[in-house]
Amino acid sequence: MTASPNEDAVQGPARVGRRTKDLIPTLRPGDVAVIDHADLDRVAAEGLVLAGPAAVVNAAPSISGRYPNVGPLLITAAGIPLLDGVGAEVMAAVRDGERVSIHEDRFESPTWSGRGTRQSIATLEQLIEESRAAIGDELERFATNTLEYLRTEHRHL
Image (cartoon, rainbow, N blue to C red; front, side):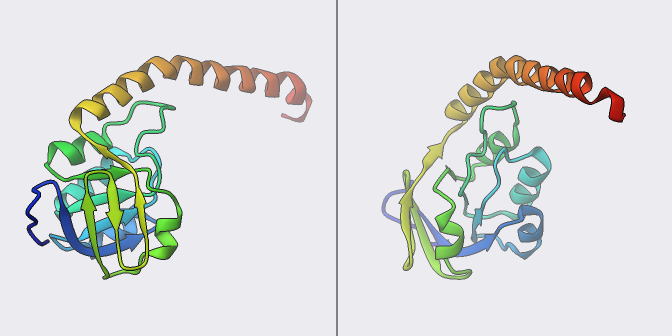
């Protein structure tokens, strides 16, 4: 990781991995983890925190809103910048090991640049609260689908 005149800027070598659990063992302190992990779970977040990356860049939203999850909150609470939802193209465009930079909501590499949402504890707490409110709707949809399946497919069970 390289210091920058703007303390919000982070630089380091990219470590790109589609499967977070497979990427974690390859991370070294100061690397920038580039992942594609919607609804980043607690176990993955704990592994990332222990690996000590300079930042985490997620192609997907770390909290989709379908259900509350605290994984992203663990990352930001550990002081690791989290840039969220930069888009799936980052996974193919950024090469493992190339030097990348994150400044506020912007991701830059020699091969690709894009924007995401720079998460904070406050923004993540808000997303978690919204997810808690929405979980009732998600459970209701699940129950409705299950009952409909049982109604139409009961003879096959």
